[in-house]
Amino acid sequence: MNYQEWTTSVLEEIRKDPLWNLEVYRLGLFIGDITWDDTEQLDKNSHTRGAADQIRRSLDSISANIAEGYSRSTGKDRARYFEYSLGEAREARDRYYKVRRALKQDVVVHRIKVLTHIVKMLNAFVPTQRKRGIREEQGIYIAFSEFENEILHEPIPIS
Image (tube, rainbow, N blue to C red; front, side, top):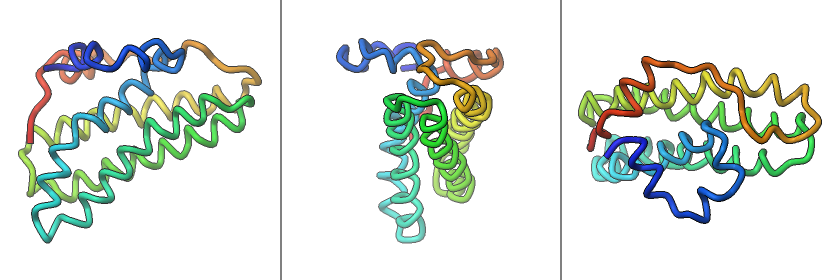
């Protein structure tokens, strides 16, 4: 399975929500979903058990904060929640790097690349939200063709 295939597996109720139009939300939901097995594996090792819990909570918070922020009425308020997501994405990326010896290298590289893409998108998105007073139905993002070719269209590495 790759990212495109994964998107079709998401419940229709979620895909029909206008929030689904935000690619950064979809990627946040994606990374939280595909990393479940990673954190289960880390949880089995006493040395990485604490990191597993932190990674799981950070990954869960990325899309959750985007969802909550999207529902706010002012750009400034939305930007605050998107900044929370940005912090969580950076934290998860940091922790994946630290546990890299306990997971397959291709898994770690994949997760870090997806998280880096989320960070880049949120870094571009937050300032635009601070300036807006109404919800932006379709986010404007810079296309990263390398990311798309390497990550979105390749099979998801399994831990």
